Length: 235
Image (cartoon, rainbow, N blue to C red):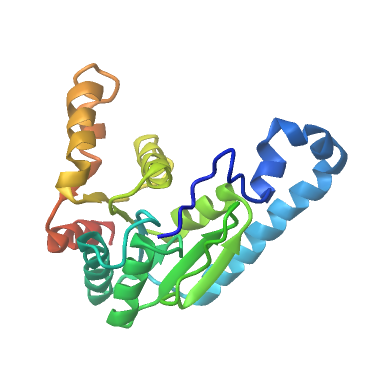
């Protein structure tokens, strides 16, 4: 698999997010701030229009690593998850990339439901996988995150890296703070997620950083039928 890491030797191309957030571009931001804000607005409008036109119905967001090999058990797990969600009547929304995202989109496509890919501009070329029916490409992460959260009624997290963690904990935070309502969240794969799950319940809860109800916002399972049943609670 191609190494997509950004390093000093592999800086990649400058993205819209970097122009917005990187201190190195602050002078450019001052000069073009109003135009940047209009770009945010345009991306929101285009995203909302496209997602509304897709008429997804109930949809589940699936997170997971772009580095998951196609010939791995984790990839097969993602295909099975996407298919089972589809058979339960859910559309499936992913980041649209390769690996676990492709797997979930593939399963949804096999089940005959709408398979959505919310792509993001990155310093490296990634592209939307071939199993996506509804494709959107975003320049700004925060706009893409709003689309995920507005059009999903629950989330399943397959094994993943920093991006998966970011999306997972943002969803948890929004549920905890009451920004979204019924919003089931499931970790798929106890061998991968067990350490984090135990740490949340042992260290975070044990030290009083979260409450018992907060710890119960997240479930972990190896049983895909159980995960799909958990997603049904959003209905």
